[in-house]
Length: 159
Picture 1 (cartoon, one colour):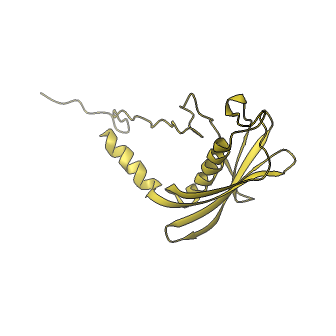
Picture 2 (cartoon, rainbow, N blue to C red; picture 1 turned 180 degrees about the vertical axis):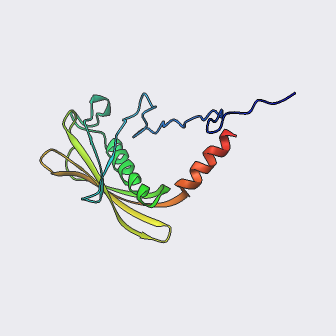
Picture 3 (cartoon, helix red, strand yellow; picture 1 turned 30 degrees about the vertical axis):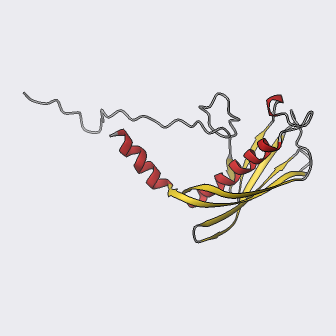
């Protein structure tokens, strides 16, 4: 019996797209923060603009310190995209400079500090509308896998 061949240029392979359940940036996480980052090429940094609602409360009317650390960590992680690597945070230092308010426009900015071998050092800052730095983070990370390799692994899982 003859097998049916697909028409040239038309693949019949079903490709399952990976969903992003990351707490900080995942659009598929219903309980997540859903931060969206853009790269500002002129300034050489990643930026996310956001507001924090009452579910992130720590001290009255202000954000919990763990959420602040999460935002800074996520922002620093985005910087590793410039090197096309997925890197895991090995160390993070957070300086809580001023209370981070709830329900106010905020932004986080992150940039690369240095890369020495497999050690990537990045920094991030959370700022208010007056450009006051409310919190600052510095983190070290080590690449776990190159993004191209990760894509190959995902494709292999689909076969």
